[in-house]
Image (cartoon, rainbow, N blue to C red; front, side, top):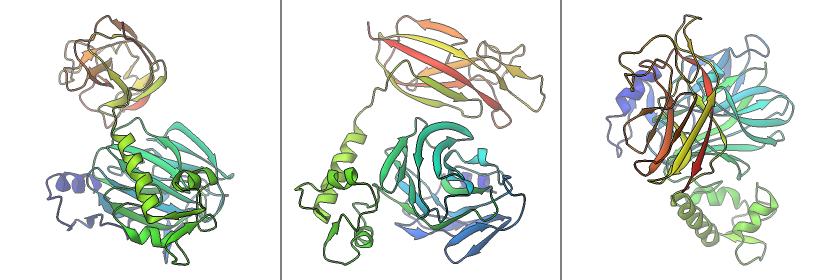
Length: 373
């Protein structure tokens, strides 16, 4: 159902707010309403697993509202610290599988959380307590993860719109509460275009947020308290997020030499690296992927024994690791290759050479080293 909704929304007017097959474009901020419910109960503002296998990924739900384009967020509270669940953003869902959540925060049932993207561990490990608030936001086409307003990590992947809040619940009794979704610029726990969020933090309504009212840590508070008087005004908060937005808008070259996971199901993985024309680029890759329901249909970065006539690089075997720079033509990389001189400048993307990705599994692990020369 979500796939049909996605196709319909791609051609909608950005200014309109409407419903298609039960999905609606997220407004400035609104409580989540749930659909595709499995083994759960909705009690007030809480979604809870009430049935199914304790510890299995057989329960969950998705939001009817979606983030249709760049700029938006979901936010929720975790009422307990002893349950297992994953909550995050998904372009479309296929049921209750945790792997369908493309940008997720995983709660492991022992007071610890980390980030998983399509089932792959990314990092961002943090401890948490019952009642903490988590946010996943899209800013300048980058997905950021926050706990109580503090940044956990920024994803290397670029999102595909629309995005819904998707929750997979493992433990009986696992729940999320106060789930909200919003469109437009999202900044930590307050947005420049919505004074209601500032007022939410300013509990005594005196025009300033004190340390006692703040839900993040001391460092985050001090960064926003420009004059150091122990009070954050609306003006200080706006100024802080304007600086933050400007930093996000800068071109980030990234760091070469890092290990980059390349999912066999993603059309393109954004490496976070910016190539300059003339750079020397060395690729080293390993791993094995499966390209269909046939267990023998596998490939390593050098490719498989078969071809894929409709793949992006037609003269290379199916499953070969491929790359492109900016909007340039894709080219084969394989298990190891050095491109002595990049022909153009742009962002570096990686993928697998296959004509159909939805039934793929696994990932390649790629190290990219850039020599400016």
